[in-house]
Image (tube, rainbow, N blue to C red; front, side, top):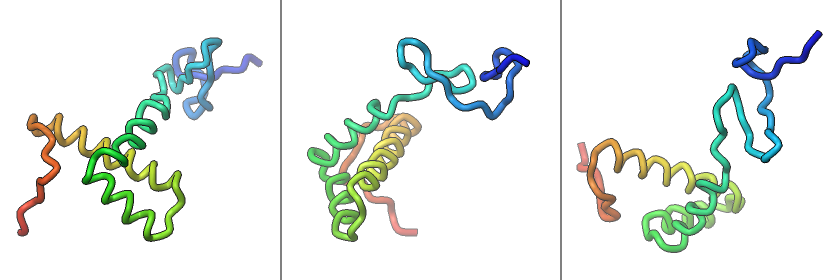
Length: 100
């Protein structure tokens, strides 16, 4: 019985990601975003972006582990990026939503 790993060849839909000879991970035939693509920008943003530095400082003071802090900043950074793209406005670090 042949082993099938991806949807492209009719394999099991919940197959584990596989790596090509070049080391790039693929899941269901799509390239998986390497963690470095957002991990290092989050580390830099924690140092240089006052909004994210304040967010990370609050997590650090709450006793959270450093990897969790970086992962939370990754998520916050992605939310900021998608917000900028969705609303087509430049990033404003002083933005605060109006109270409703």
